[in-house]
Image 1: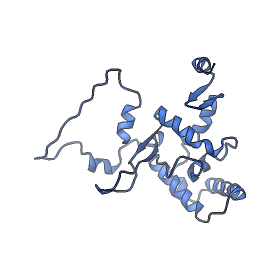
Image 2: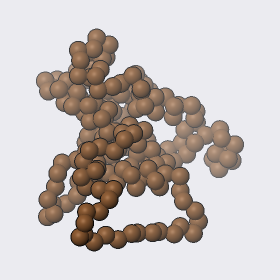
Image 3: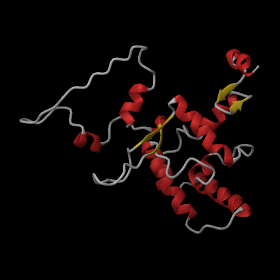
Image 4: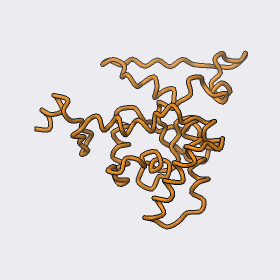
Length: 196
């Protein structure tokens, strides 16, 4: 029955998560793609953002222990998210950024966040990347974190130019890599390559 409903577009499924009301996915995406959430808004003392954060923390403290560093932590996470789409920490119910962004969706329980992010990863909306991460030396394991691709910069960051120069310097070797995909190129491949 689920297969028929999916084929008709009545539901959307991702592994064991079934959306019986597909427009709800739009409600989940809306705060992540909110164009009015900008770096200037976070850095300034914006009344509406400050009020949203106050309401969020007041509600959070009714149900959980008080965290004095919450506002500063949330502002840092918001800045990282707006700058590059980086989602600090795990994509589960303990993620302060996600809880803030999805605060208005009362029926969306935090224990379902990780399942929704699995679906986002399957669809290429979220990818795991090293962009925006800490500089690492060769001996440390590469730390990856989720990136929401609709928040990626339109122009490459300055650091990309230093790591991936468009033209090789004189007296350096280079090679070209070509990959042939027999079944065609997936839509999200270019974005995934760009972000990784």
